[in-house]
Amino acid sequence: METWHAAKPGSIVHGAPAPKAAPDPDAPPKPPTYTQVFGERMIEEVRADRRVVGITAAMNTGTGLNLLQVAEPEHYFDVGIAEQQALLFASGLALEGLKPVAAIYSTFLQRAYDQIVHDVCLQELDVVLAMDRAGLVGDDGPTHHGVFDIAYLRHLPNIVLAAPRDESQLVHLLHTGIQHPGTFALRYPRGEGTGVPLPGAEGPRELPIGKGEVLRQGDRVAILGYGSGVGVGLEAAAVLSEAGIEATVADARYAKPIDVELVRDLAQHHELLVTVEEGVLQGGFGSAVWEAGDEHGVDWGSCRILRVGMPDRYVTHGAPKLLHAEVGFTGADVAARIGVALGVPVGASAAGD
Image (cartoon, rainbow, N blue to C red):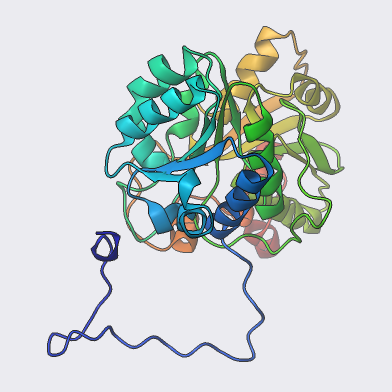
């Protein structure tokens, strides 16, 4: 079934698949994909704790759980194209003391929203929602872009929302979610990681819930990224540095709960706080930062907030790199917007002067 889900071109005469381009022998090795890292880590989590199981809804290879199916078949379940059933099944297993990890694309998890609300979160169950394809996924088109999950999950009680900035953080956060006593939603993008080393023999560590991390220290402007937004923020900081602006860059790591003390510190020491997320702005991570600050009495003072994310429209079909440029989700685009907010020419506008 899955073979024909996304069939590749083939000969109409003898049915043979179209030949693939030969790989460049001199090209450096590519980083593993987030999907591959997730699938391999699931095997290790199962072997460390036999209560862990993986569940998907006809997204076997697409989620990386095909690796678990081969290595630990008794800990793998595919319920077919039935996301609602996947979450109900996960709920039942959790009630019996197992630790289910439901791996479903961000866009298809929408189909199981009622089950997440009433059968998972309301019951405060130990279920991990592993959302592959978060953000703009490219050639599968508008139906597959995973840009709504932050907004449609953030307002639910009894849930933690997390996103890794790279594949190493994915390993740590998956482990954290499995150890967490409650519902844990983990979003990560399609495609290759950043190439950072994965945890070695020491294994993954649990990351404190609701705590972010400062990666780069600067002044005037602070960029607070979530998930893939961290990498975009670091790229923007490099562009800003060329214009004489040194930006602080922090990884929020969690969209719920928000690291309020980190937000408080960034607001206190910068005149502009920029949130960067690969999701819709309405009800998204940037909104969560502002709301958490307001709820916990953060003194914004002269600090303004600039939210960067996906536009209020359905994004078209195309390669992720092209789509990111089309919606202004690149380091250069973010740096230019920051320059406008600060009244300082940045990037192409600075070069033109």
